Structures are given as structure tokens and as C-alpha cells.
Image (cartoon, rainbow, N blue to C red; front, top):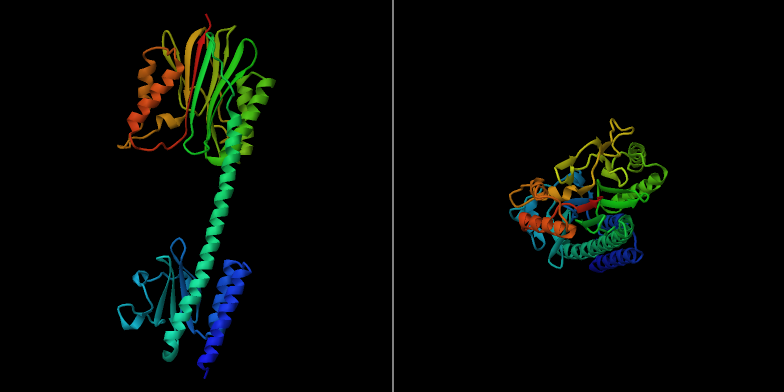
Amino acid sequence: MATSIDIRDLELNALLEITQAINNNLSEKDLYKIYKFTLLGDLKVKKLALFVHDNGWQCPIHFGTSKDYSKAKLDRSLTAIEEITYLNANEHKSEEFEIAIPVYHKQSLLAIVLIGGLPEESQEDSTTFLKALTNIIIVAIENKKLARRQLQQEAYRKELEIAKKVQNFLFPKSLPKTQKLNIEAVYLPHHDVGGDYYDYLSIDNDRFLICIADVSGKGVPAALLMSNFQASLRTLIRRTQKLDEIIVDLNHSTFISGNAENFITFFVGIYDFNKATFEYVNCGHNPLYLVNEKEVILLNDGTTILGMFDPLPFLSTHKIEDVRDFFFFGYTDGLTETFNQKEEQYGNEPIDKLLGKGMPEDLGAFHEHLLKDLDKFKEEVPYRDDITMLSCRVKNL
């Protein structure tokens, strides 16, 4: 029979081994393995199940039991115990275990150790030591998890910084502000990095291109996909001004880059001052607006979302003739799909009413009016998506 001195030596050796393992920065899996064999070999524990709280209660270690506790659910009543509990002496009954040892750290219950087969004469000393040993292991593993989460957060922060820089390059540095052509834009990202994009490109002295897009997904993948999209568009517009050819190539590159998993809604229009025509394609985007002195025209014609099918199932361009004095308004669905407390959508009706009054002359004031009305509508409900607005006023008289 082992003497108390022998038991103390075993306990000290166990503590030393565990401490060395932690100092050597072993993995969580290796720490659990050393813990298990220390209890089996040095402390002669016959039955054990260790439940650890990690996105719910899980059992990473069990031995000597009649069933597989890795798939067992912890008795919820045990999560209320605050001290070493003898299971068969109170309301907590167990066929395999006699003792439950809660492990706390800073008032948080991190683990519960279920023990069976300990001799009665050594139960008190063994359970006290087991609690201390388990606490050391579990706290070390929690610290590893915390360090890992911090590294992940730091990596995510750096990703966001990269995505922000990428996205900042997407938007034009300046927009025309002349009597003949005035363009204003507003971009409000829902998170640090969004998936919206707008652009203005001067093709030659007579023609310019405007576009607006919304990519599925957020963060770095969305920013990179949109960056590739913008680069492709700017390359294509130098090669051809035929919108059907541009859309076919953009769809193909998006299909490849997005792996048929990320899609882009896109609207593109080209205005020709010399011919007084506005030609456009709507690729699954919201219906946008062209307002002149006579009417409000919804710009719907085109094709489906880009990146979903290759080749596109259908494609048409639409040209509006003899349009010299007009207002164009484009937006992403973050505007119309803003919800209020009654789960009602903002929708297109407020935009329709506003544009029904005629063409706005102050584009900044027009955007400000919409945003104020949107804030009033949603009240305390947070925005769920990015919001982009692009307005263009042409006076080709």
C-alpha cells in the first residue's frame, strides 16, 4: 500500500510533468493526453469523464466507463454545483461515478470532472489534488484559445485594412461638377468593408459611362472580386464601347473569379452628347430611374445577375433616343430594403414620389433628403446592408 509520502511524490511528479508540458507550449490535444495518462498511471484513477465548456458542454477525455461519454450529454443539474459533490449522497445520482468536481476560474465554470473508483480513505485528498490539477490544465487550454482568438482577430483586422484600401481604389477620385454634367455619389458601408461599387468613366469628348454594382458577400472576398470586376470593366471599355460585348466578358470573368458562388448585380449606361442617346444594360440590379421633362422611366432591360450562368441565358441592350435634359438616379438595394420596427421595407414608393416632382437640381440635397427620410422611417432599427446612391444631371442643350 502506498504511503502518504509516496502519494505526495506522485502528485508532485504529476504537477511537474503538467507544468513542463504547458511551458513547452504543447497543443491542447497533447495537454489532454498528458492529463489522461497522469491520472491513469500516477494517480490510479479508474473511471473519469472530463466535461469542458466550449460552445456547449463537451467531453474530450473519458476512460474506464461503460459507455462513450464523448457523445454523452452532461446532466444539466451538475452545472449548478459549486463545490466537490458526492453524487450518490444527494439528488445527483450516477451509475458510474461517485464524485463530481467543478472547476472554476474567475467565477466562470470551465469544467466538471466526474470520478469513479477512488478508495474512500483517499477520496478527500485525491479530489482536492484532482481539482487543482484540472484547473491548471483547463486554464492553460483556455489561455491557448484566447491567444488563438486574438491572433484570428488580428488577422481579420489586417484583412479589413487590406479590403478597405482595395475598396477605396474602386471609387473614382473625383466626379464632374459642371453645368453640362453633374454627378454626385453617396456610399454608406454597413460594416467596415462592403460589397457596393459605383463608377464614372469618360470615354471621349462626347461619351461617358456610369455604373453601379452590388456583389454578394462582404469583407475581403467581396472587395477582391469587385476589384477584379472594376479592372476588367476599365480594360474592356478601352477596347470596345459595345455594351453587349462588355457584359458578356464581365459575366465570364465574374463566373471564373467567383467560382459560380459569388454574384454581382450591375447597371451600366453610356451617354452620347453628340447623338443625345442613353444606352444601358441592367444585369439583375434594382430598377433605376431616368427622369426627363415628360416622364419617369424605369431602367429594367438587360439580363440576369452576373457570375451565375456562363453563357448568359439572355441579353439585350436598350437605347433611349433624343434625351438631352435628364436626371439619372441609381442605388443599391440597401436603400429600398431598409426595415422599420414593424418589419416593413422602405421600398421604392418614397423615391417614386420624390422623382414625380421633377428633376432635382441640387444632387447633394436630393441624397440628403432621402437619407433623412430613411432614418426617420427606420427609427432605431439598424441598417442591414450597404447603401449606395449615384445621381447624374445632364443638360445637353
